[in-house]
Figure 1 (cartoon, rainbow, N blue to C red):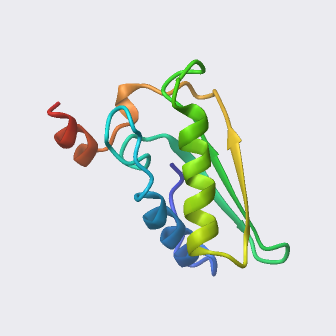
Figure 2: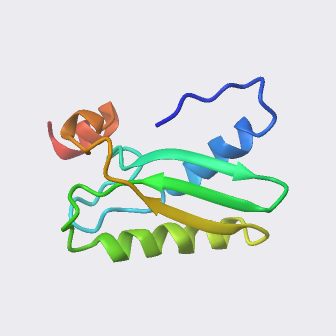
Length: 110
């Protein structure tokens, strides 16, 4: 996930979006997608009112991929109804267990 620059005016809004995404739980691992390291980037376009999430899944064949993407869209539409949500699934860099946060590892018993 990107580093936030607090000197940029949209950084605090991006942080709110990230915190909202903690409500999206991977149904198989029962951990939120932020702590799993599935979200790579959050972009907010204030002019066009679009929130774009660049994220990945644990694998391209993830059986719950559609559910997770749908949950991201639903979560952001609920919390930020004045914005359109766009989710871009990306496969580079490839997701690995190294992307899981300390809290995610603790929750997984790692």
